[in-house]
Amino acid sequence: MADREQRLTWRGTAAQWDRRLFDAVARRHWPAAERALPALGRAADHGVLWGGIAAGLTVLGSARTRKAALRAAASLALASATVNTVGKWSVRRPRPLLEGVPLVRRPAVQPWTTSFPSGHSASAFAFAAGLALESPAWGAVVAPVAASVAFSRVYTGVHYPSDVAAGALLGVAAGLTVRELARGARRARAVPGDERPAAGVPALPDGAGLTVVVNSGAGTAGDAVLGVLRDRLPRAEVVECGGEELEAELTAAAARAEVLGVCGGDGTVNAAATAALRAGVPLAVFPGGTLNHFALDLGLTGAEDTCRAVTEGQAVRVAVGRFTPAGASGATEGDGGDGGEGSGGGGGYFLNTFSFGVYPQLLRHRLRWAPRIGGGPAALAAAWRVLRAERPVRLTLAGRPRSAWLLFAGNGTYHGTGPTPRRRDGLGEGLLDLRLVHGGGRPGPRLLAAALAGPLTRSPAHTAVRLRRLRIEDIPPGTPFAYDGEYAKAPPALVLDALPDALSVYRPS
Image (cartoon, rainbow, N blue to C red; front, top):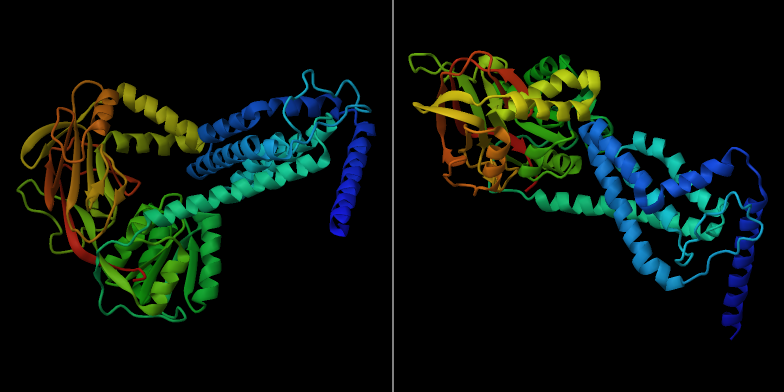
Protein backbone atom coordinates (compact mmCIF):
# COMPACT_ATOMS: atom_id res chain seq x y z
CA MET A 1 0.00 0.00 0.00
CA ALA A 2 2.82 2.37 0.87
CA ASP A 3 4.54 1.61 -2.43
CA ARG A 4 1.37 2.44 -4.36
CA GLU A 5 0.96 5.72 -2.51
CA GLN A 6 4.62 6.54 -3.19
CA ARG A 7 4.16 5.90 -6.92
CA LEU A 8 1.05 8.07 -7.04
CA THR A 9 2.88 10.86 -5.21
CA TRP A 10 5.79 10.66 -7.68
CA ARG A 11 3.45 10.75 -10.66
CA GLY A 12 1.63 13.75 -9.24
CA THR A 13 4.90 15.61 -8.69
CA ALA A 14 6.10 14.80 -12.23
CA ALA A 15 2.79 15.99 -13.69
CA GLN A 16 3.05 19.23 -11.71
CA TRP A 17 6.55 19.93 -13.06
CA ASP A 18 5.39 19.06 -16.56
CA ARG A 19 2.57 21.60 -16.32
CA ARG A 20 4.86 24.23 -14.80
CA LEU A 21 7.30 23.90 -17.73
CA PHE A 22 4.40 24.08 -20.16
CA ASP A 23 3.08 27.26 -18.52
CA ALA A 24 6.56 28.80 -18.47
CA VAL A 25 6.91 28.32 -22.22
CA ALA A 26 3.39 29.71 -22.75
CA ARG A 27 4.26 32.88 -20.83
CA ARG A 28 7.50 33.51 -22.72
CA HIS A 29 7.27 35.90 -25.64
CA TRP A 30 9.73 35.56 -28.52
CA PRO A 31 8.64 37.95 -31.28
CA ALA A 32 10.64 36.17 -33.99
CA ALA A 33 9.14 32.81 -33.03
CA GLU A 34 5.46 33.79 -32.91
CA ARG A 35 4.91 32.87 -36.56
CA ALA A 36 8.07 30.94 -37.43
CA LEU A 37 7.67 28.05 -34.96
CA PRO A 38 3.97 27.36 -35.70
CA ALA A 39 4.75 27.46 -39.43
CA LEU A 40 7.65 25.03 -38.91
CA GLY A 41 5.40 22.66 -37.00
CA ARG A 42 2.80 22.74 -39.78
CA ALA A 43 5.52 22.06 -42.37
CA ALA A 44 6.38 18.87 -40.48
CA ASP A 45 2.77 17.60 -40.59
CA HIS A 46 2.61 14.10 -42.12
CA GLY A 47 6.41 14.15 -42.60
CA VAL A 48 6.23 16.62 -45.50
CA LEU A 49 9.23 18.66 -44.28
CA TRP A 50 11.41 15.56 -43.85
CA GLY A 51 10.29 14.08 -47.15
CA GLY A 52 11.31 17.27 -48.90
CA ILE A 53 14.73 17.27 -47.24
CA ALA A 54 15.25 13.59 -48.12
CA ALA A 55 14.27 14.23 -51.74
CA GLY A 56 16.68 17.16 -51.97
CA LEU A 57 19.55 15.15 -50.53
CA THR A 58 18.79 12.27 -52.88
CA VAL A 59 18.80 14.45 -55.98
CA LEU A 60 21.68 16.76 -55.09
CA GLY A 61 23.87 14.65 -52.82
CA SER A 62 26.62 12.10 -53.27
CA ALA A 63 26.09 8.34 -53.09
CA ARG A 64 26.86 8.42 -49.35
CA THR A 65 24.39 11.27 -48.85
CA ARG A 66 21.67 9.39 -50.74
CA LYS A 67 22.28 6.38 -48.51
CA ALA A 68 22.00 8.64 -45.44
CA ALA A 69 18.71 10.11 -46.73
CA LEU A 70 17.30 6.61 -47.23
CA ARG A 71 18.40 5.59 -43.74
CA ALA A 72 16.78 8.74 -42.30
CA ALA A 73 13.49 8.09 -44.12
CA ALA A 74 13.43 4.49 -42.87
CA SER A 75 14.04 5.68 -39.29
CA LEU A 76 11.19 8.18 -39.59
CA ALA A 77 8.84 5.48 -40.91
CA LEU A 78 9.70 3.18 -38.00
CA ALA A 79 9.23 5.93 -35.39
CA SER A 80 5.94 7.09 -36.90
CA ALA A 81 4.56 3.55 -37.05
CA THR A 82 5.56 2.91 -33.43
CA VAL A 83 4.00 6.12 -32.14
CA ASN A 84 0.73 5.71 -34.01
CA THR A 85 0.21 2.01 -33.29
CA VAL A 86 1.60 1.57 -29.79
CA GLY A 87 2.49 4.87 -28.14
CA LYS A 88 -0.66 6.90 -28.66
CA TRP A 89 -3.05 4.12 -27.70
CA SER A 90 -1.12 2.78 -24.72
CA VAL A 91 -0.93 5.90 -22.53
CA ARG A 92 -4.01 7.86 -23.78
CA ARG A 93 -2.93 11.11 -22.19
CA PRO A 94 -5.24 14.06 -22.95
CA ARG A 95 -3.88 17.16 -24.69
CA PRO A 96 -2.90 20.18 -22.57
CA LEU A 97 -5.45 22.88 -21.77
CA LEU A 98 -4.59 25.91 -23.90
CA GLU A 99 -5.25 28.57 -21.29
CA GLY A 100 -2.24 30.89 -21.25
CA VAL A 101 -1.15 30.03 -24.80
CA PRO A 102 -1.52 33.14 -27.07
CA LEU A 103 -4.06 32.71 -29.87
CA VAL A 104 -1.48 33.52 -32.54
CA ARG A 105 0.41 30.36 -31.67
CA ARG A 106 -2.51 27.92 -31.43
CA PRO A 107 -3.20 25.62 -34.38
CA ALA A 108 -6.32 26.39 -36.40
CA VAL A 109 -7.47 22.79 -35.97
CA GLN A 110 -6.68 21.03 -32.72
CA PRO A 111 -5.11 17.51 -32.99
CA TRP A 112 -7.61 14.76 -32.20
CA THR A 113 -5.13 12.07 -31.15
CA THR A 114 -3.84 11.55 -27.61
CA SER A 115 -0.90 13.58 -26.37
CA PHE A 116 1.81 11.07 -25.32
CA PRO A 117 4.27 10.76 -27.00
CA SER A 118 4.74 13.55 -29.52
CA GLY A 119 4.66 12.10 -33.04
CA HIS A 120 6.21 15.23 -34.56
CA SER A 121 9.14 15.00 -32.14
CA ALA A 122 9.61 11.29 -32.76
CA SER A 123 9.64 11.80 -36.53
CA ALA A 124 11.98 14.79 -36.31
CA PHE A 125 14.56 13.10 -34.09
CA ALA A 126 14.29 9.79 -35.97
CA PHE A 127 15.07 11.55 -39.24
CA ALA A 128 17.96 13.52 -37.71
CA ALA A 129 19.38 10.46 -35.95
CA GLY A 130 19.14 8.24 -39.02
CA LEU A 131 20.84 10.92 -41.08
CA ALA A 132 23.58 11.61 -38.51
CA LEU A 133 24.46 7.94 -38.04
CA GLU A 134 25.28 7.68 -41.74
CA SER A 135 26.40 11.27 -42.47
CA PRO A 136 27.39 13.23 -39.33
CA ALA A 137 27.83 16.47 -41.29
CA TRP A 138 24.29 16.46 -42.66
CA GLY A 139 23.01 15.28 -39.28
CA ALA A 140 24.53 18.37 -37.68
CA VAL A 141 22.76 20.56 -40.24
CA VAL A 142 19.34 18.95 -39.70
CA ALA A 143 19.54 18.53 -35.90
CA PRO A 144 18.64 22.19 -35.08
CA VAL A 145 15.64 21.95 -37.39
CA ALA A 146 14.50 18.77 -35.63
CA ALA A 147 14.94 20.40 -32.20
CA SER A 148 12.94 23.44 -33.36
CA VAL A 149 10.09 21.25 -34.61
CA ALA A 150 10.03 19.42 -31.28
CA PHE A 151 10.03 22.67 -29.28
CA SER A 152 7.26 24.07 -31.48
CA ARG A 153 4.92 21.38 -30.16
CA VAL A 154 5.15 22.81 -26.64
CA TYR A 155 5.26 26.40 -27.91
CA THR A 156 1.98 25.98 -29.79
CA GLY A 157 0.33 24.27 -26.83
CA VAL A 158 -0.38 20.85 -28.33
CA HIS A 159 2.06 18.80 -26.19
CA TYR A 160 3.54 18.73 -22.71
CA PRO A 161 7.36 18.83 -22.44
CA SER A 162 7.43 15.18 -21.36
CA ASP A 163 5.52 14.22 -24.53
CA VAL A 164 8.23 15.88 -26.59
CA ALA A 165 11.09 14.32 -24.59
CA ALA A 166 9.57 10.84 -24.91
CA GLY A 167 9.03 11.34 -28.64
CA ALA A 168 12.63 12.49 -29.10
CA LEU A 169 13.99 9.44 -27.26
CA LEU A 170 11.77 7.15 -29.30
CA GLY A 171 13.00 8.81 -32.51
CA VAL A 172 16.66 8.33 -31.60
CA ALA A 173 15.92 4.70 -30.71
CA ALA A 174 14.31 4.23 -34.13
CA GLY A 175 17.42 5.61 -35.82
CA LEU A 176 19.65 3.23 -33.86
CA THR A 177 17.34 0.30 -34.61
CA VAL A 178 17.41 0.95 -38.35
CA ARG A 179 21.20 1.12 -38.24
CA GLU A 180 21.39 -2.26 -36.50
CA LEU A 181 18.92 -3.78 -38.95
CA ALA A 182 21.06 -2.50 -41.82
CA ARG A 183 24.18 -3.97 -40.22
CA GLY A 184 22.39 -7.28 -39.74
CA ALA A 185 21.34 -7.33 -43.39
CA ARG A 186 24.90 -6.53 -44.40
CA ARG A 187 26.26 -9.36 -42.27
CA ALA A 188 23.67 -11.72 -43.78
CA ARG A 189 24.83 -10.74 -47.26
CA ALA A 190 28.50 -11.13 -46.42
CA VAL A 191 28.72 -14.92 -46.25
CA PRO A 192 32.10 -16.49 -47.11
CA GLY A 193 32.11 -18.54 -50.29
CA ASP A 194 33.97 -21.75 -51.14
CA GLU A 195 37.27 -20.18 -52.24
CA ARG A 196 40.37 -22.36 -51.75
CA PRO A 197 42.58 -21.57 -48.73
CA ALA A 198 45.80 -19.75 -49.59
CA ALA A 199 48.82 -21.58 -48.24
CA GLY A 200 51.94 -19.78 -47.07
CA VAL A 201 50.52 -16.32 -46.37
CA PRO A 202 52.21 -14.69 -43.37
CA ALA A 203 50.54 -14.20 -40.01
CA LEU A 204 51.25 -10.72 -38.65
CA PRO A 205 50.12 -10.65 -34.98
CA ASP A 206 50.98 -6.98 -34.43
CA GLY A 207 50.87 -5.80 -38.07
CA ALA A 208 54.63 -5.62 -38.63
CA GLY A 209 55.20 -6.14 -42.37
CA LEU A 210 51.77 -4.78 -43.35
CA THR A 211 51.47 -1.47 -45.22
CA VAL A 212 47.92 -0.10 -45.51
CA VAL A 213 47.17 2.58 -48.07
CA VAL A 214 44.06 4.53 -47.02
CA ASN A 215 42.17 6.51 -49.64
CA SER A 216 41.74 9.96 -48.11
CA GLY A 217 38.33 10.16 -49.81
CA ALA A 218 36.97 7.38 -47.58
CA GLY A 219 35.89 10.01 -44.99
CA THR A 220 34.41 8.73 -41.72
CA ALA A 221 34.75 5.11 -42.88
CA GLY A 222 38.49 5.64 -43.28
CA ASP A 223 38.72 7.22 -39.84
CA ALA A 224 36.97 4.19 -38.33
CA VAL A 225 39.40 1.82 -40.06
CA LEU A 226 42.37 3.83 -38.77
CA GLY A 227 41.05 3.47 -35.23
CA VAL A 228 40.75 -0.30 -35.57
CA LEU A 229 44.23 -0.57 -37.10
CA ARG A 230 45.85 1.41 -34.27
CA ASP A 231 44.15 -0.88 -31.75
CA ARG A 232 44.55 -4.29 -33.42
CA LEU A 233 47.66 -3.93 -35.63
CA PRO A 234 49.73 -1.16 -34.00
CA ARG A 235 52.95 -1.85 -35.97
CA ALA A 236 51.31 -1.68 -39.39
CA GLU A 237 52.51 1.16 -41.62
CA VAL A 238 49.65 3.46 -42.70
CA VAL A 239 49.80 5.76 -45.73
CA GLU A 240 46.95 8.22 -46.36
CA CYS A 241 46.66 9.64 -49.86
CA GLY A 242 44.21 10.19 -52.69
CA GLY A 243 43.74 11.33 -56.26
CA GLU A 244 46.61 10.86 -58.67
CA GLU A 245 49.01 9.83 -55.89
CA LEU A 246 47.02 6.73 -55.00
CA GLU A 247 48.24 4.35 -57.71
CA ALA A 248 51.90 5.31 -57.21
CA GLU A 249 51.63 4.87 -53.43
CA LEU A 250 50.03 1.44 -53.85
CA THR A 251 52.79 0.34 -56.22
CA ALA A 252 55.51 1.58 -53.84
CA ALA A 253 53.81 0.00 -50.81
CA ALA A 254 53.46 -3.36 -52.59
CA ALA A 255 57.18 -3.29 -53.48
CA ARG A 256 58.37 -2.84 -49.88
CA ALA A 257 55.68 -4.60 -47.82
CA GLU A 258 55.22 -8.23 -46.92
CA VAL A 259 51.46 -7.70 -47.18
CA LEU A 260 49.64 -4.86 -48.98
CA GLY A 261 46.57 -3.45 -47.26
CA VAL A 262 44.01 -1.05 -48.69
CA CYS A 263 41.10 0.97 -47.33
CA GLY A 264 38.62 2.36 -49.83
CA GLY A 265 35.83 1.47 -52.23
CA ASP A 266 35.85 -0.93 -55.14
CA GLY A 267 37.88 1.35 -57.44
CA THR A 268 40.60 1.74 -54.81
CA VAL A 269 40.61 -1.99 -54.08
CA ASN A 270 41.00 -2.68 -57.82
CA ALA A 271 44.11 -0.49 -57.94
CA ALA A 272 45.50 -2.27 -54.86
CA ALA A 273 44.80 -5.70 -56.32
CA THR A 274 46.66 -4.70 -59.50
CA ALA A 275 49.67 -3.61 -57.43
CA ALA A 276 49.55 -6.79 -55.32
CA LEU A 277 49.35 -9.04 -58.41
CA ARG A 278 52.35 -7.36 -60.02
CA ALA A 279 54.41 -7.50 -56.82
CA GLY A 280 53.33 -11.04 -55.93
CA VAL A 281 52.15 -10.17 -52.41
CA PRO A 282 48.87 -10.99 -50.61
CA LEU A 283 46.17 -8.34 -50.21
CA ALA A 284 44.33 -7.25 -47.05
CA VAL A 285 41.09 -5.37 -47.80
CA PHE A 286 39.64 -2.99 -45.19
CA PRO A 287 36.17 -1.95 -46.48
CA GLY A 288 35.95 1.83 -46.41
CA GLY A 289 34.15 3.12 -49.51
CA THR A 290 30.62 3.94 -50.54
CA LEU A 291 30.40 0.64 -52.42
CA ASN A 292 32.22 -2.46 -51.16
CA HIS A 293 30.90 -5.20 -53.46
CA PHE A 294 34.16 -7.14 -53.52
CA ALA A 295 34.52 -7.14 -49.72
CA LEU A 296 30.90 -8.17 -49.17
CA ASP A 297 31.06 -10.96 -51.74
CA LEU A 298 34.30 -12.12 -50.12
CA GLY A 299 32.56 -12.29 -46.74
CA LEU A 300 34.22 -9.29 -45.02
CA THR A 301 31.83 -7.17 -42.94
CA GLY A 302 34.38 -4.69 -41.62
CA ALA A 303 37.92 -3.92 -40.54
CA GLU A 304 37.71 -6.26 -37.53
CA ASP A 305 37.32 -9.27 -39.83
CA THR A 306 40.39 -8.31 -41.84
CA CYS A 307 42.49 -7.64 -38.73
CA ARG A 308 41.61 -11.05 -37.33
CA ALA A 309 42.56 -12.76 -40.59
CA VAL A 310 45.89 -10.88 -40.81
CA THR A 311 46.69 -11.69 -37.18
CA GLU A 312 46.00 -15.41 -37.68
CA GLY A 313 47.37 -15.71 -41.24
CA GLN A 314 44.09 -16.82 -42.82
CA ALA A 315 43.56 -16.10 -46.53
CA VAL A 316 41.88 -17.50 -49.64
CA ARG A 317 42.69 -17.60 -53.35
CA VAL A 318 40.29 -15.62 -55.55
CA ALA A 319 39.85 -15.39 -59.29
CA VAL A 320 40.51 -12.14 -61.13
CA GLY A 321 39.15 -10.90 -64.45
CA ARG A 322 41.64 -9.48 -66.95
CA PHE A 323 41.29 -7.29 -70.04
CA THR A 324 44.22 -7.23 -72.46
CA PRO A 325 44.71 -5.44 -75.82
CA ALA A 326 44.69 -7.86 -78.75
CA GLY A 327 46.61 -7.51 -82.02
CA ALA A 328 44.91 -7.69 -85.40
CA SER A 329 46.59 -11.02 -86.12
CA GLY A 330 44.81 -12.66 -83.22
CA ALA A 331 47.76 -12.63 -80.83
CA THR A 332 47.07 -11.30 -77.38
CA GLU A 333 49.56 -8.86 -75.94
CA GLY A 334 50.76 -9.68 -72.46
CA ASP A 335 49.48 -13.28 -72.28
CA GLY A 336 52.57 -14.25 -70.38
CA GLY A 337 52.68 -11.10 -68.27
CA ASP A 338 50.48 -9.09 -66.01
CA GLY A 339 47.89 -7.69 -68.33
CA GLY A 340 49.92 -4.64 -69.33
CA GLU A 341 50.86 -1.46 -67.54
CA GLY A 342 48.14 0.78 -66.21
CA SER A 343 44.52 0.73 -67.33
CA GLY A 344 42.63 1.55 -70.47
CA GLY A 345 44.59 0.77 -73.64
CA GLY A 346 47.36 -0.95 -71.65
CA GLY A 347 45.15 -3.59 -70.09
CA GLY A 348 44.30 -4.29 -66.48
CA TYR A 349 42.21 -6.34 -64.08
CA PHE A 350 38.69 -6.32 -62.67
CA LEU A 351 37.60 -7.88 -59.40
CA ASN A 352 33.89 -7.29 -59.94
CA THR A 353 32.65 -6.21 -63.37
CA PHE A 354 33.63 -5.00 -66.82
CA SER A 355 31.21 -3.36 -69.28
CA PHE A 356 30.72 -1.65 -72.63
CA GLY A 357 27.71 0.39 -73.70
CA VAL A 358 25.18 2.32 -71.64
CA TYR A 359 26.85 2.09 -68.22
CA PRO A 360 30.28 3.41 -69.29
CA GLN A 361 28.54 6.28 -71.09
CA LEU A 362 26.57 7.09 -67.95
CA LEU A 363 29.78 7.00 -65.93
CA ARG A 364 31.62 9.18 -68.46
CA HIS A 365 28.98 11.93 -68.44
CA ARG A 366 28.56 11.81 -64.66
CA LEU A 367 32.30 12.14 -64.01
CA ARG A 368 32.48 15.10 -66.40
CA TRP A 369 29.49 16.99 -64.98
CA ALA A 370 29.69 16.12 -61.26
CA PRO A 371 32.42 18.69 -60.38
CA ARG A 372 30.23 21.46 -61.79
CA ILE A 373 26.68 20.52 -60.72
CA GLY A 374 27.11 17.83 -58.06
CA GLY A 375 26.81 14.04 -58.08
CA GLY A 376 23.00 13.69 -57.96
CA PRO A 377 22.13 16.16 -60.75
CA ALA A 378 25.03 14.81 -62.82
CA ALA A 379 23.65 11.25 -62.57
CA LEU A 380 20.17 12.40 -63.64
CA ALA A 381 21.53 14.50 -66.50
CA ALA A 382 23.74 11.62 -67.64
CA ALA A 383 20.81 9.19 -67.66
CA TRP A 384 18.72 11.66 -69.68
CA ARG A 385 21.53 12.20 -72.16
CA VAL A 386 22.32 8.51 -72.62
CA LEU A 387 18.75 7.24 -72.89
CA ARG A 388 17.89 9.98 -75.42
CA ALA A 389 20.95 10.26 -77.62
CA GLU A 390 23.23 7.23 -77.40
CA ARG A 391 23.38 4.50 -80.01
CA PRO A 392 24.18 0.82 -79.48
CA VAL A 393 27.83 -0.20 -79.71
CA ARG A 394 28.73 -2.38 -82.70
CA LEU A 395 31.29 -5.03 -81.78
CA THR A 396 32.56 -8.37 -82.97
CA LEU A 397 32.24 -10.91 -80.15
CA ALA A 398 34.00 -14.26 -80.61
CA GLY A 399 34.04 -13.67 -84.35
CA ARG A 400 30.35 -12.70 -84.67
CA PRO A 401 29.18 -9.10 -85.32
CA ARG A 402 26.89 -7.80 -82.57
CA SER A 403 25.01 -4.63 -81.77
CA ALA A 404 24.75 -4.09 -78.02
CA TRP A 405 23.24 -1.56 -75.65
CA LEU A 406 25.20 -3.17 -72.84
CA LEU A 407 27.87 -5.83 -72.52
CA PHE A 408 28.45 -6.90 -68.91
CA ALA A 409 31.15 -9.33 -67.81
CA GLY A 410 31.30 -10.36 -64.17
CA ASN A 411 34.26 -11.95 -62.40
CA GLY A 412 32.38 -15.06 -61.33
CA THR A 413 28.70 -15.94 -61.54
CA TYR A 414 26.32 -13.25 -60.34
CA HIS A 415 22.85 -14.03 -59.03
CA GLY A 416 19.63 -12.32 -60.01
CA THR A 417 17.97 -11.43 -63.25
CA GLY A 418 18.83 -8.68 -65.64
CA PRO A 419 21.96 -7.39 -67.31
CA THR A 420 23.82 -6.19 -64.19
CA PRO A 421 23.06 -8.38 -61.13
CA ARG A 422 24.88 -7.51 -57.93
CA ARG A 423 25.74 -10.54 -55.78
CA ARG A 424 28.03 -13.58 -55.98
CA ASP A 425 28.23 -16.61 -53.72
CA GLY A 426 31.98 -16.91 -54.15
CA LEU A 427 35.05 -15.52 -55.87
CA GLY A 428 36.91 -18.73 -56.67
CA GLU A 429 34.96 -19.92 -59.72
CA GLY A 430 37.26 -18.57 -62.43
CA LEU A 431 34.54 -17.95 -65.04
CA LEU A 432 33.21 -14.79 -66.70
CA ASP A 433 29.46 -14.16 -66.31
CA LEU A 434 28.62 -12.52 -69.66
CA ARG A 435 25.34 -10.59 -70.10
CA LEU A 436 24.49 -8.96 -73.43
CA VAL A 437 21.58 -6.56 -74.03
CA HIS A 438 21.05 -6.66 -77.79
CA GLY A 439 20.80 -3.46 -79.83
CA GLY A 440 17.63 -2.41 -81.63
CA GLY A 441 14.85 -0.08 -80.61
CA ARG A 442 15.50 2.33 -77.75
CA PRO A 443 17.76 1.61 -74.77
CA GLY A 444 15.09 2.13 -72.09
CA PRO A 445 12.67 -0.62 -73.25
CA ARG A 446 15.56 -2.95 -74.09
CA LEU A 447 17.17 -2.57 -70.66
CA LEU A 448 13.79 -3.04 -68.96
CA ALA A 449 13.12 -6.20 -70.97
CA ALA A 450 16.58 -7.50 -70.09
CA ALA A 451 15.98 -6.75 -66.41
CA LEU A 452 12.86 -8.93 -66.51
CA ALA A 453 14.65 -11.78 -68.30
CA GLY A 454 16.03 -14.78 -66.45
CA PRO A 455 19.71 -15.01 -65.44
CA LEU A 456 20.62 -17.47 -68.22
CA THR A 457 18.06 -16.83 -70.95
CA ARG A 458 18.30 -16.20 -74.66
CA SER A 459 15.65 -13.70 -75.62
CA PRO A 460 15.33 -10.96 -78.25
CA ALA A 461 16.58 -8.52 -75.62
CA HIS A 462 19.07 -10.43 -73.52
CA THR A 463 21.65 -13.21 -73.66
CA ALA A 464 23.63 -14.64 -70.75
CA VAL A 465 26.44 -17.22 -70.82
CA ARG A 466 29.41 -18.28 -68.71
CA LEU A 467 32.81 -18.68 -70.30
CA ARG A 468 36.53 -18.56 -69.56
CA ARG A 469 37.65 -16.22 -72.35
CA LEU A 470 36.10 -13.77 -74.81
CA ARG A 471 37.68 -11.90 -77.71
CA ILE A 472 36.14 -8.50 -78.59
CA GLU A 473 37.13 -6.94 -81.92
CA ASP A 474 36.17 -4.04 -84.21
CA ILE A 475 35.68 -1.71 -81.25
CA PRO A 476 34.87 1.78 -82.60
CA PRO A 477 37.58 4.38 -81.84
CA GLY A 478 37.01 6.26 -78.60
CA THR A 479 34.52 3.73 -77.22
CA PRO A 480 34.52 3.89 -73.39
CA PHE A 481 34.44 0.92 -71.06
CA ALA A 482 34.09 0.64 -67.30
CA TYR A 483 35.70 -1.73 -64.83
CA ASP A 484 35.00 -1.77 -61.08
CA GLY A 485 33.53 1.73 -61.35
CA GLU A 486 36.52 3.17 -63.22
CA TYR A 487 36.39 4.56 -66.75
CA ALA A 488 38.77 4.27 -69.75
CA LYS A 489 38.90 4.32 -73.56
CA ALA A 490 39.11 0.96 -75.35
CA PRO A 491 41.70 -0.15 -77.92
CA PRO A 492 40.48 -1.61 -81.26
CA ALA A 493 40.43 -5.16 -79.84
CA LEU A 494 40.41 -6.72 -76.37
CA VAL A 495 40.55 -10.14 -74.82
CA LEU A 496 38.66 -10.76 -71.57
CA ASP A 497 39.69 -13.77 -69.56
CA ALA A 498 39.33 -15.14 -66.04
CA LEU A 499 42.44 -16.00 -64.01
CA PRO A 500 41.55 -18.68 -61.42
CA ASP A 501 43.25 -18.48 -58.01
CA ALA A 502 45.25 -15.46 -59.13
CA LEU A 503 45.22 -13.40 -55.92
CA SER A 504 45.59 -14.20 -52.21
CA VAL A 505 43.25 -12.13 -50.04
CA TYR A 506 42.99 -12.23 -46.25
CA ARG A 507 39.69 -13.50 -44.85
CA PRO A 508 38.93 -15.21 -41.54
CA SER A 509 37.95 -18.85 -41.82
